[in-house]
Structure formats: C-alpha cells, structure tokens
Image (cartoon, helix red, strand yellow):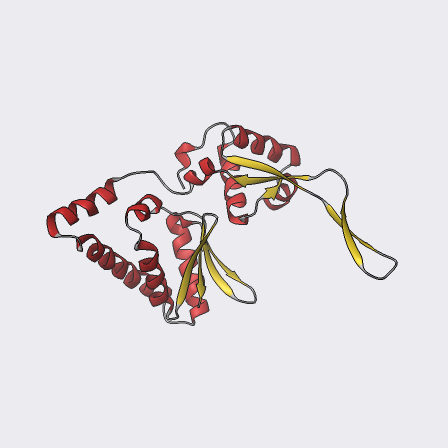
Length: 220
C-alpha cells in the first residue's frame, strides 16, 4: 500500500479504516468500523469524513430493512428509520493499494522487445513467475492444498498484497492490494501467468478472478 499518499493527522487509524473497508469489498458503516477497530463511534466518524473529503472514500445510503410477519404467515420487508451511511473505497482510494505508479518495469520489458524481438517480454515474465513459484513452493511446504493456500496467503500478505485466506463452504485467497496494475495494462498476459503460478504452488487448478479491485484465487 502506498502510505505516502495518505494525508492528515491520525494517519495510523486512517490506514486501518481504509484497510478494513477495502477488505469488506461492499463497504462498511461507522458503527461496523467502530466495533471492528475498538474505537469510539465519533472518532471513526471523524476519520471517515476526513478520508471522504480527501477523496479516498465514497459514500452511499443503504436502506434499513426490517422483516415483519403478515396474517397469512408470510413475511415482508419495509424500510424503517434513517438509511445507514456506508463508506466504500473511491477510485482515488484504490490507487493507495496499487503501490507507487511507475512505468520503469514496463519500460524495461518494452526495451527487451525492441532489442530481442516480440516474444522477449513474455519470456522474461514466464521466467519471473517460474522463479516466484519455486520460492513460494519452498515456503508453503508439502501439506494439503488448503494448508498451502493458508500459508501462501500469509506470505503474500507480508509482502504487502493485503492477502487473506477465506474458508467457508469453499475456500479462496483474496487479495486487496495489487502492485502490478499498470504493468498488466501493457502486458495483459500477466493475470493468466499469475493464475498458473498459484496453481503450481498449491498443486490444484486455480481460477483468478477480479471483482471490484479485489483479486480472488479459487479452486476450479
């Protein structure tokens, strides 16, 4: 995460607020953030308002619905009370999770193409992801796919990808910070190479999907 772009006092709490909202995907209310962070409602509200003013957060109103039984034994929902204010990451806030914008890696790959031909960049990327796969394989060991996925998520989280292992009826690795966004724009083969790399490390076929800026790796 590019912390240097975050301004104002209370930087530490604001970073945590941004991270919680980013991980939520659909956004959080001040009440939910206050409960998760163990901070006062008014303190969280002040930080959220400041982040919204800086352009890092966007807001929308979520109607409060209440279920009510009917005389026929069915239930229906109706709006009651003031709608909840929900905070979500804005496009400007998303840039905080993409790392510093630099064209240098892309420039290097383009120079490789000009020197060694049209397939040079792809060969370099393939070699890089193979090297990454070997390193991760050595770190996650030889357990089950689930065990390796959990360890891989912890490893990539330490590398700044905001990665976490989610387990329920199924399981997935979810990542909220991507440092290769600008590089992917120039070299669209990168997502499939990353998908193949994660599949190789975990020993099972994986699918890489991107939903609202969040990258998920799921078993096929």
